[in-house]
Image (cartoon, rainbow, N blue to C red):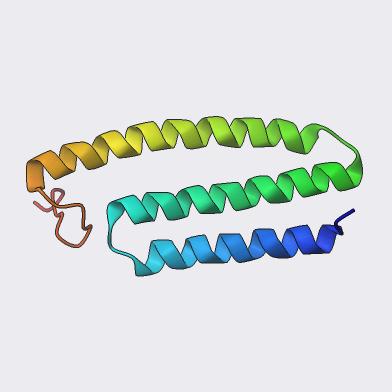
Length: 100
């Protein structure tokens, strides 16, 4: 049986790796992968607390987070593909479509 503190520590490490990936990288695909890593870290924390408290509430939240993550990936990848067709780059520093 894995202690709750180890699972929460792993979740925090994964979340921090995701935050660093979002802040440091300039590639849009890597940024989306880092966001997915942060969502999966929160899912791990939900499942850990769910198992620790002997409740299914955390697993229900995981289901909703996975649904939102799937929708985010579908919309995000569609935007990235559209931007790549328009600008021929996926680096966020080179994309300035919203400038007036």
